[in-house]
Length: 127
Image 1 (cartoon, helix red, strand yellow):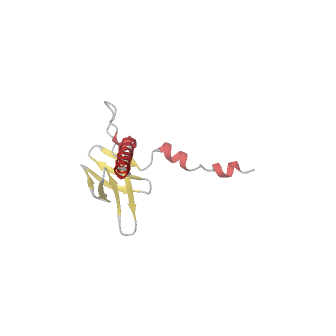
Image 2 (tube, rainbow, N blue to C red; image 1 turned 90 degrees about the horizontal axis):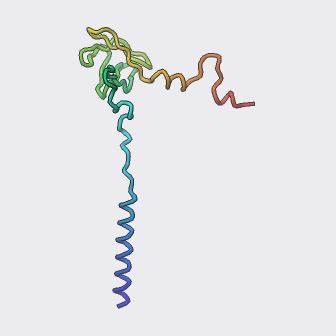
Image 3 (tube, rainbow, N blue to C red; image 1 turned 120 degrees about the horizontal axis):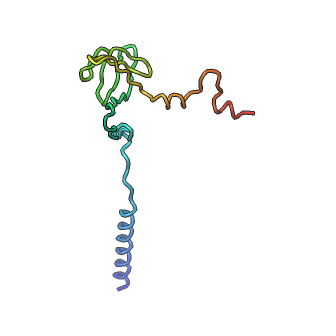
């Protein structure tokens, strides 16, 4: 009888632990999901933003990943042709004109590196 009681208590405890664990579990975020800025809808009347995700520059390969699509230098993205690639931006040419896509927004770029004649935070804190 004592064995049955211990077995029932053990089963009850295991069941309680499983129920607690499942209710406290949090949803995991997908590390490959694009940033929220890219997923948010644009304001009415605003031009849709074409996201530049990556720039690939090497001796053998020059291209960019735009909206998840690899576009080589000279290749096309929609109706535009990729005509120029630098380390931080690409230029697309279409019938509507030139469109420059930047890898980083100007605000992020300015915050990332000090300008000429400015000290970095680390150097500024030193006595």
